[in-house]
Length: 574
Image 1 (cartoon, one colour):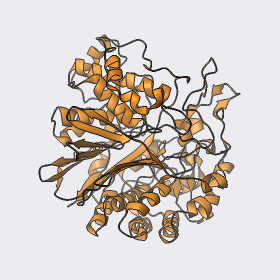
Image 2 (cartoon, one colour):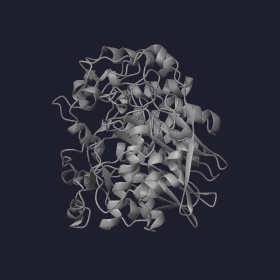
Image 3 (tube, one colour):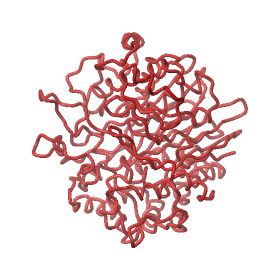
């Protein structure tokens, strides 16, 4: 484990608050210089050194990319609880070497959920932070079922073997890093949960310091059952009972039931691909909106230079147009039909040409979807904390997995899995990814509104890039609504402009706030650029962005791996 002392100094520079109008998915914590990693055969890149090494060890023991992804993700559940874990869900994109498959382990709304459940007095949305920190926001978690399902079909090592590293580390403990410490420090709701307050904070209310060894007996005990018996305990056993009891006993109780957990199933989803220049971009279809938006942004913006005013303006306007399509159309495909009978219509070349022609020299005053819908556009919401990992193995298999508990620390409900031991895992608050206001003033429903059994829309974008039929890149990022912007910018810089991979990762970040205003990474862009954008009509915001791109890119003799400097990740392999 790297020493945390030098990294901790970065907290003083990165703890600035975001401007009014833009709330970060997770607080900024570190910015560290990353090296260049090259591997001949196989590699894992993830948001924490212990997680990347757990995945690389699985590969070294003869495992494949699926085995490595499971080992990596379960370690992240322990060491990065603010971003993902077994109380959340995710999307997994798998390249078998011959076929590309998409798996949906997204959370589902309980059977007793109602579209108006986040309204106060039947008409006004409750404060977003109150909705997040509540049992009402907890959906049926899908991550463990997702990992088990994909591993059962495609894994090579025994299930218990890939779970064991997280058990061992939970028992031995891990050192609290600067990012976890900072997110604990600034969180406004975590201390309200008695179990979380007792486990993650000292007696005086301060979070455990950087370097403190934190053991998690409850998670170790629960994962031992998972290793021995499979994931069913979380869906029908003592862990399921504990989860339901905590959700229903919360001061803002939720509607989760034992039947909801028992009935959860992983879904295979449509893989969406689009040609872009000489590459083919592929990702997960709805309810994930990320791949759709990445492909749209790149097609609408064109081969622009993000370091110049004109190119940045076009990218921003393209992202606004893509966001308008997302806000009107994209939702769980089991509940909502795609526009013009197919989601691929949003990637139709003629449609994108018409949309691109709308981009002028100034900020457009009004941006709407170019396709009709019976639904109202979603005008609220902001997706939150997430993580991403990328894996390739020497047999040619690859995994891109993006997972989340939604907000940092999810619903702020720490569950011990019925073990009665200290620690455990956080329950998600994914139901706040639905529209808090389910209908517009005319009574038209929002496509992404709460409905029983429905999966909330997500901006997660695990993606793979192919060149002449050969796998070229594996990538993705956390960042909530900003995920498509981070991924699209990285692809534009690295593939189209030829910028070295780590330099493209280190480059100034940009995103769009929920209202469509551009957000530039503070103190990273050249002077005068923000002023020039404002002259074009943009209300430019500046903040310390918290992307977490983790990328593998094929090079002549193997793979080049890169980890986002805004998190604590590394790459490992051979």
